[in-house]
Image 1 (tube, rainbow, N blue to C red):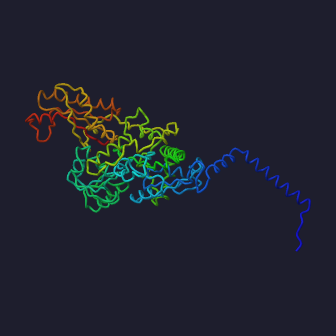
Image 2: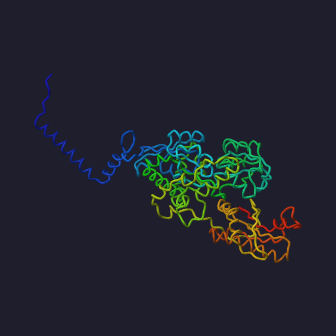
Image 3: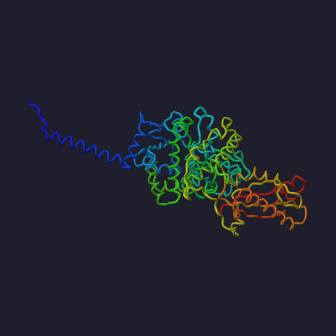
Length: 516
């Protein structure tokens, strides 16, 4: 068979096509947007999915069925790694959210490297640090504060925390539910020893136990709280994290080695996540979009997911600055505060936390410090602004009452250093943890002296305590309800002030949490 030969004209056409193609390519390379995309791809792609800088092609994040991670999932345009993700478009890498609701399975995935970041809550983290020690876990950023996502449901007749004494309470041990119960009982001068703890595997199981009427109360997740109230006649939500605002903080944890290899990429992950959170915090329509994303990723109804997002405070960059104690003017709860307090509380209850290292060795502030996001959208959450105290609020029954014996000199109402220290140790942490509840401060005296003058004095003493919390800890003035009882509310058993011990008990200050 004879071979076809190119004519001179054909050769000229081929050369012209090649020259034209090269010219087009060169002009495109001069196009800034095309050049940027080429540079991004060449910097990202490397051998075995690694970038030249050590970037991973995909960061795997372990999560559970919870609304507090919506900022990252919304910014990612879904749960799976994809090219529509703003992480990919803006920073050049993909993110995959792996839903692992089983606690032990999530920890195994972290240990074997199936996920690069895992969720945790700072309140319960001290109980698991020792088991993760060989991986040098580091808290890298905060995702949210629970704000209604956790609740205690109670049966008919239980109207305040003290009514739980001796009752059966279903709770998953060493979880956020357990932490919430510990704080609530403490706010009423009680502990878990004063109730009958019925241990269950999870908050979902706690709800089932309550609906089956095998317990008097249960610590559950939303929306199971509403389901419990609907299905158990006379049941109510006793309290939730809508008022207990600073007890349950969701964070993400990474191995120290992973952070050192991927610090720049993790900083971009944090930055994008915070941008997503700020967009959700300011827009209902954005929350609805996020609810669709969560519905697909969690296999839950959209309204369930929308409510889940509204039951948390999605942490902003400003919130993280406060959480990692990078704001010298912040007087609220930091990650270190919560971690250290819960380490002691769990250890005192017999759950060993001796292997829990110090916060300084378990956290890194680098991602937050290296990020620059400004404007009100990225600001920290402000304190609740309380209205002036009305008569209905002034005498409303309290949820919890804590007695603190503050000593005053005879006839005086000024606080001494010892009294201030006592307030800081025994009540200030509770006041900060339940930041959305009002505080009623009641001053009480023994029966020595004139009753009317004792009432005036006791009110001045209560106001002195409130002034200290306002001026030293910057709590809102309208948050406080001031009562002076004088000798009219003696401690049970000391109604006659029959001895010096009883008189001492009656010279007390009561702190009560009152829900608006």
